[in-house]
Image (cartoon, rainbow, N blue to C red; front, side, top):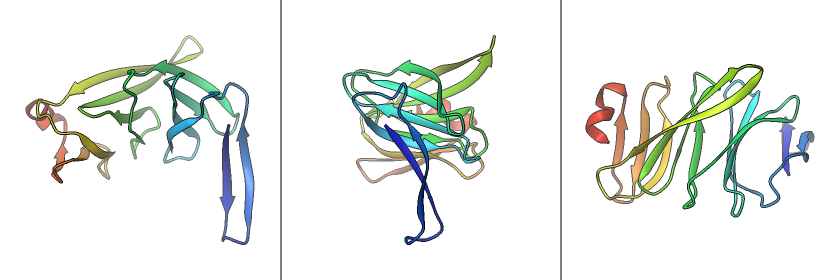
Amino acid sequence: RIEIYRYRNMDNIQLSYTFDDECSGSGYSHLDISKNGEYIIAISNIPDLQIEFWNIKTQEKLSSANIPTDGLKFVSFSPTSHELFITANNNSIILWRVYYKFDQYFLTQTIHSLKQLRQIVTITFGENGKEIVYCNNFGELIVFDEQSASDDF
């Protein structure tokens, strides 16, 4: 079950949306709301291991895809588009794209395995959505864009 609350202050909290139908029975480990506030991306727990793309207003699951069996640690929408988001596990960054074709939503993924054997601790997009920023378990902060991505992967 997913619940979204809106609040003006801690004394005025109201339940705005509840997602019950089609929700993962195993619960969710991570989620993010798109910057336009219209979509949710959620990662379900074991045994389901799915990534799910939801419309907030209609409370409808628009698409889902299987994820690696070692799971995913993070999810982050691009600040510039609800059709682009990233996830990561220990040594891979996965770039996801949402597309709409024949009245249906689809999720595609591009997996980038890191050459260096250092675990990803956190990951997000840069402010303009053109860079990906992550930190590894050695405390290194790595920023790359499309031009430098081939050097880092």
